[in-house]
Each structure stands twice: as C-alpha cells, then as structure tokens.
Length: 514
Figure 1 (cartoon, rainbow, N blue to C red):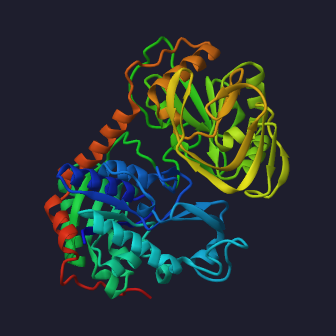
Figure 2: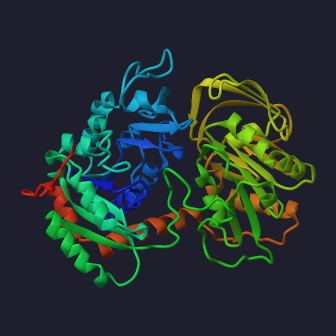
Figure 3: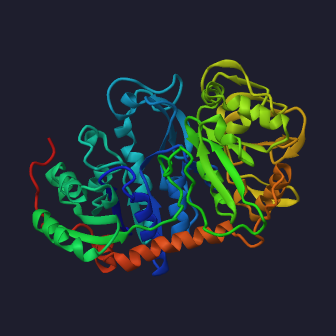
C-alpha cells in the first residue's frame, strides 16, 4: 500500500483544501505519484469527472494539483444541501436520495422513498469510503486525505467517516491545520487534540499554522510552548497568501455587500473596464463559473443581492443554484427580477447558467427539487423546463460564437428551447443568454468572443486581453500552493509521516473524548 496522510482542521475553512492541494503539488514535483481523497464532502460546488461522476470541485482542483484525472474514488460521498436540514446524498458520483441531517448523521429519518440508503446512516458508508481509499493507496505512491470541519466534533465522532474514523481504520497520521488569522490558534490546536480519545490522539502527529502575517520569530516561543504542552511537532508556518483564487468548498470568501472577488491585478487593454454583477441567489452552486471572468484584466466581478447594485453592471450573471424555484422567489422578493426584466427590455446583457438559465425561461414544472409543481419563470428566454428524477451529469464539448467550448452539466431540469438563437445547449435572445454548461467561460477563445459581445451591447470600449489563459493562471496558482509547502513546511518530516505513519509514543492530552 502507498503512504498516506490526513489533513484535518481546527475549523471549517482553516485551510485544509489549500494545504492538501499544496502537498499534492509539492509531491508530484518530487516525482511522487499522488492522489487526493476526501471521504465525505458537503458542498454545492461540484464537478463532473470524465466518467460522468459528480464529486466536490475542491477534490477536482486537488487532482489537478496532483496532475491526475479526478475520479469518484477521490470523493465517494458528497452531500449537497437543499435546506438547513436536508441534503442530496451523492454516492460514488450518483445521487441516491434526499436525507435529513438527523437521518444521515444519526437518529431517525431516512432517505426519499424508493431510494438507496433506506434506513441507512453515515456510518453505513464507512466500508465504501475505506474501499475507495484502499484502491487509491494500491494505485498511488501517496494519498493525501482531507478531513471535514473539525476532527473534534464530539457529537458526530461515533459515525465519523471523514476525519478520525478513517484515520483510525486506515492507520493514517494526522496533521491539524489552524487559521492563525482568526486568532486563538494555540488554544484551537490544544483543544482539538485534548477532545479526542486516546486511540485518536495517538494518530495526531502535529500541526500546521496557516495564514500567518508578520515576523515568524515572534511566533516561535508559542510553537515551543505548544510542543511542550502536547509533545507534538509543528510541521509548517504558512504565510498569508493573497489572490490564490482556488476553488472553494462551502462558501464565498467575499462579502456579498459590494465586495470585489479576488482577481488578476492588471489594467484593462481597452479604454473601459467591464463590470460584472453576480446575483447571490440562495443555495448558489458552482459560483466558480465566474472565476474565469475575474481572471480577465479589466473585468471587475462582484456578488450582489440588491436591485440597485445591478444598475451600473455591464453584465449580470444569474448563477447555478440547488433551488431554482426558491431562487426565483428570492429574485422576485428582492426586486431583482423586475430589474432583470428591465435590463432585458433595454438590451443590456444578462447570462443565466444552469439554475439561472432555467429561471430565465417561461415556465418551470418541478415535482422533484422543490415539488412546487407549475411555476412561471421570468419569461426572458423562450424556454420551458421540466425537472426529471434522473440527474444529468455530462462533460459536453461544442462550439459557440465561432469558438470551441468545453463544459460540464449537473442538473435535474430538462430545458425545451422553443425559439431564439442557439447558444451551447440553450439559447440567446437579444442580450440575454442561457446555458446549462458550467465551466464554459474557462474556454479562452469563447470567453473573449462573449466579452466582446457584452461590451458591444453595454456600449463599453472594453477589449479582452488577447493572451489570457485561464488554464495557465490556474497552474500558476497551484504552483504557488506547492511553493508554500516547499518553502514554509518541514517537508522532510512530512515525507516521513507519509511513508512511515504516525510517530510512536505521542503523549495523551487530558481530558480526552467525553
């Protein structure tokens, strides 16, 4: 079996995804055949593999960091929230039903009638998760696993299949990442360790400090005291890095109140900038679709939730969502729907992607996602949508605006296009475009032609840069993650962990698990 390592975190968004990707990129540059893994992911930001399996987009990004093709083995369980209390369960890349949080993590409640996992819970999936991990470890020299949330979620430890549950079952060493930019990192490291049982603590090899600003020598006394208190090594102090722009998992890094998403700092090629407003709809999915726009010099992207914030936008994007009907209601309640209709009547650009495309149509028939039945859409595109029980998962290739385009599809809604000009799998009428294709804007030639049309319709003297390569920019970002590990982590010690497993004789820190 190949070596392994589990990257856990003191909290969600501590930097587990970044560190996992960085270690993958560092290892592959050393000639190590490496793969990422996350047993269970909760995210609306997902991706479709070449075999048509849906996995977390963070794992697809980590696979790119490892320079391997993503597969369902790398993320066997994906939970896609549909509300605060229930999620769609995606098992080995395929949806198998809706389940309440209580039903999944423990307690009463099962999945949808007639679906798999009847009466099942999270713990029932441990065998599947471990089989996937074993298969990867039999194929690769090393597998870098990412945990979820915190390993010290004492209310969920009994059924855990993503943190200490798999670490103990697979005898993986664990490194805990903490975000020092939030404060309290030493207490978080100590408390996380001290709330684990003796068998779990024996696997926690040490810590990585993430997002440190300033003089590292000022931190060193605290690192030494932490070692004295826990008997554990700190494997790296990673500096705060601006503008990484990697695919996120659980939420937006930016405020929704007029904040600009991180983008390339470069002046526009033409005389004008192009302003893009993204409607921050409920249950927003695959918001990374607009990353390629933010990568263009002179394009300013922001997420908005008020109609007045659309006024000066040259392009409004209505993104994907796990709740199309709910998003439609939200747009109407906020006054954004009326503003979108006004824009369309004035010939000002609007782009709908996936769920955003569906709600721009004339009519929605939904007995699957919201079970709302017949619902009137915004009527900006000649499209009727019917939700099917079977989810469409695909990696389409095509042509639009005279350029080749690649994308991926994740949707239950089936669109019947009644009129308009063809646009990928959807259509456009005037300055309103709609498509189910996620990721299409990452195709450089197509993105440039599309932005030219937007600029023309908006009356802006904006010119797309002729040489922006989104793929090259992504590779640069992943190399920066590899550099963070190579330059600021104890790579020799990390390699020993991966090859040899948890160090012997790690002390127990009381009180342990309740």
